[in-house]
Image (cartoon, rainbow, N blue to C red; front, side, top):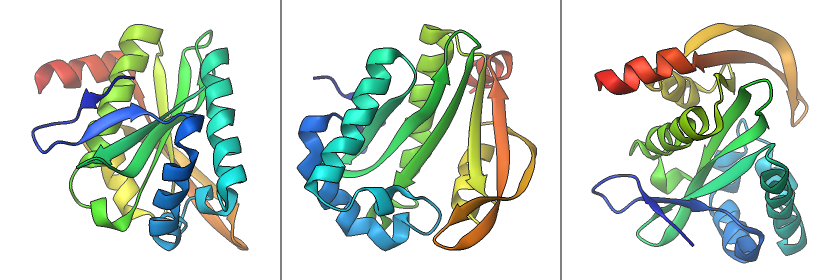
Length: 186
C-alpha cells in the first residue's frame, strides 16, 4: 500500500481498491446528493455489492492498463477521488474525472490530486492528451480544469443524460508539452 502526500494539510492520494468497498460506500452515502448533482457515481454505488463491483471494475481497468481510480483521504477519512475513466496508452489519450463529498469542498484537494495523476500519466505512461469532461453547469469542476491549465475545446450540446435531464458537456484538455511547461513554471 502506498500513499502520496497532497500537501502539508495531511491529505493523501491512495489507490481505491475493491477491499475498500465498505469505506467507499460509507463515503458515497455521506456525499450522495452533493456528488450526484452532476456525476452518476452515487446512482451506481448503492450498496456493498455495487460498491465492490464498481471498485473491481477499476481494478480490472488498471490490470488492463485502460483506467485507474484513486481516493483522496483527509485525516484518515476517504473524502473524494480522482480517476482516469478511460486511458488509451497506445493513442496517448486519457479522460480524467473527480468527485468530492461536501465536507472536503473548497480545499483544493481535487486540483492537487488531479495534478498528481496527470503528472504520472504524462511522465510515466506517455499520455499526450488528458481530457476533462464536465457538465457546463458544474462551475467547481470547470474551475479545476482552469487551475490545471486546461483549454476548453468545445461543448457537446445536451450529450449527457443524468437523472432525466440533458446537460451540455464541456470538453477541456491539456497536452503533454503544455502540462510540462506549466508544471516547470510553477
